[in-house]
Amino acid sequence: MQKSTPAGRPRSDLNATVFAATLRSVRELGYAGATMDRIAAEAGVAKTTLYRRWPSKGALIVDCLLDAIGVVPLEGETRDAMLETAVRWAAEKIGEPGVGAAFSGVFSEAINDPALREILNTRFQAPYLAVLREALKEPEQRILLIVDVIAGTLLHRLGISGRPMVEEDVDALIAMAQGLLR
Image (cartoon, rainbow, N blue to C red):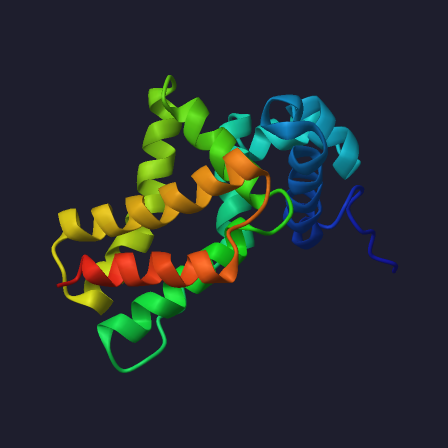
């Protein structure tokens, strides 16, 4: 007897397809123009499929960013070396097509959306803060400042110029962040 397979897109591919469509839509249309309708059409899925997994565009963007960014690499023997790899990694990730715009958009939207702010805090920021705090052996407030300086500077540059930060400026940002460990 032949087993039937469920109709529709295989689940394992759905997130990858939706995340690619999300970043493509944000890159082409900006955060505001990348609506759930547009993302669903770009991904070739029904809008209800998106809303079954993500209650809002902001929640979808957070999961998309977590997927695109991945785990922070903390390579090296010293705190300075670990922080350097983390800053270079962040600069590279924020410079990827659609990622910086998605970051900026979701952060801006969270200012007036407490539910999205909570998602950003618990699902996005808290895990990165915990990893950095453990690796760098610094109090949470200091790690939060370091993250604010790095992410804020990288996103500001991208927002003002439309381009990722150049290598020389990444080097200066690393030195500035390392200075916060002193």
